[in-house]
Image 1 (tube, rainbow, N blue to C red):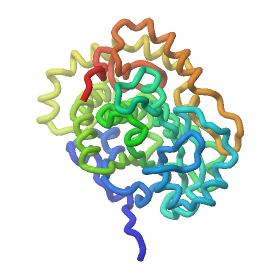
Image 2 (image 1 turned 135 degrees about the horizontal axis):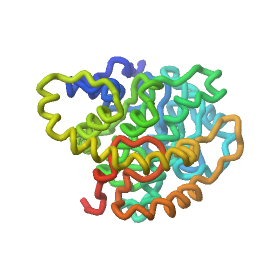
Image 3 (image 1 turned 45 degrees about the vertical axis):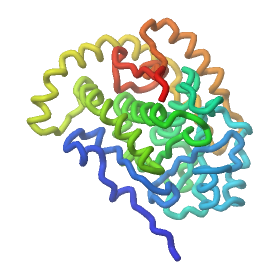
Image 4 (image 1 turned 90 degrees about the vertical axis):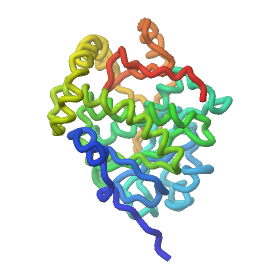
Length: 322
């Protein structure tokens, strides 16, 4: 019996749900199901450092791709892979995908405590390092061609112990920042956030409810054309001035961040290279530079390198326990 495969091109986007938001919201879709059964260019695996497979999504992807085939593909990578790093392989026996991106998210110990700043940066790096492949287009793409659609699971949740609501919020912010600041919307057709159950769905819906309006304001500030209904324009125009002012105030800091090496280059592992730099050390260096910001809270979502969709005054407080 053949398995039912869902084509990512058929999935509605956030722009379909909200009725506006191009060219950012039309790049993101939510889908609840088995990530091994979605047709797209690349699926992201919530991998462990040794790339040997395991339980949950990691085990499911290894089984679908073929245990021996995937073991052979990952043999050339350094072990252990740094936390926050992403290794790229072909999808082996998963015929409806071209590639698998093996992202090593942070493990929270004890589970479900509030993540440290370093752990937040490592999780963010998983998203930015994977998305970085879409822009840099390494020679490895000659194997199957470039990536235009990519599916992410809920990285580091489950047995890795990251609080699902905080992981969802960080994922949403990271994607919005990459799409806007790195002009990622020019390089991707669709990003699919693959959810396992209704609890995951609730976490992502809550994160989107909080961050879509801020992202729309950032889109306006960055001069992106937004197709939105007049009623939305009237309602949101009351907050535009304050949002724009906040974006201006963060400009100097963002310019400084852009001069640093990008977060995705820290985490990326090319299939033809057997050496991988330690992102843990680089992230620690970033920590020392960003300690100068007095208004940084536990979430630190405006810290680090690369794109930003939010301003410094709109950081997320992750200190509350659930």
